Amino acid sequence: VYFFKVSILLSLTDQYSQQGWVYFKHSFYYVSPVKKNWRDSRQECLQRGADLVIINSRDEQVSVRAIWIGLTDSETEDIWKWVDGTLLSTSYWFGSEPNNFGSRDEDCVELGVYGTEMNWNDAPCRFKNFWICEKMLVL
Ligand code: MMA
Ligand code: CA
Image: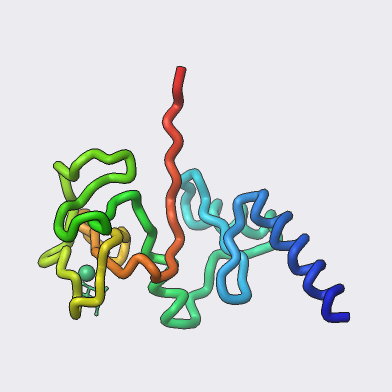
């Protein structure tokens, strides 16, 4: 029975992740690639057999608003580099970020924690967030 459950879960996760869903703590999340108003967004969710996310834990609140971007100083402390190797020039740090808070090795950058345009925060790379990938179009 156990193996059966595991294989159902695996194939379900597989199926969902191919369609762009992310599994996190007993739920599947889908981050939309397009902007829509609230009503149409809800409609899209309902069509996918889901609904707009209900924030009912602090974990969910922190994860849903925070998204990893391709910026890190894990090679050399305080030297912020993009994942393609370029040095950071224009930045959008919030307030006194990056602050390596509590010397807890905040070497990766998340955005969206602060509700302002300047909204970057350095956070521990091992923390779990949603993320955005970018693929450049090569013609
Ligand atoms: C959190 C964490 C840090 C951030 C501070 C700002 C408590 O730690 O997100 O990365 O710098 O908040 O107060
Ligand atoms: Ca920080």
